Every structure is written in structure tokens, then in C-alpha cells.
Image 1 (tube, rainbow, N blue to C red):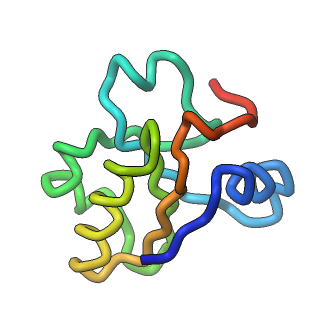
Image 2: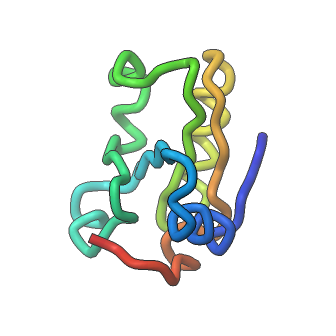
Length: 99
């Protein structure tokens, strides 16, 4: 499984040189405290039923609170043929802007 640190993802967001596809797998009450700008919210429990919203030709960065659930989502989606990267440390390590 590919991984990036929260700092590396923040740098990619700040540079804005590429369109990032960030998926936040936290629960509703967790994302209410703020998400990475332009992230899409798909709770971990909904990943399997909402896979049709994702494109296998794109790369996705998976995010959660600490990196555990996004790691589970990454492994699951990778097994289904998706190109995914887990953001290690999760939002607990995120120092960039939120919305």
C-alpha cells in the first residue's frame, strides 16, 4: 500500500499543481470539525456501496482521523483495482487549512 504523510499531502494541496482526489472516510460528526479543502466525504462503512462514485483511472488519497481506517479503505479499494494512497497520521497530523 502506498503512503504519504499528512505534511506531504499538505504540500501537494498547497502547490495545487495537480488535481487531487481526496476521500475522507471519517464519520459525519468527525468531518463536522473540518475537512481538507475539496475532499469528498465517504464514511468507511459506505465505501463498498459507493465504489461506483470512484474512477479506477484516477488516484485517490484516503484520509481518516489517525490513518487506521483510511488504511483499511485503501487496502479494500486496492483489492478492487483502485489506485489509492493512505495518508499516514490522518487529520490528527494535518496542519493545513480545513473547510
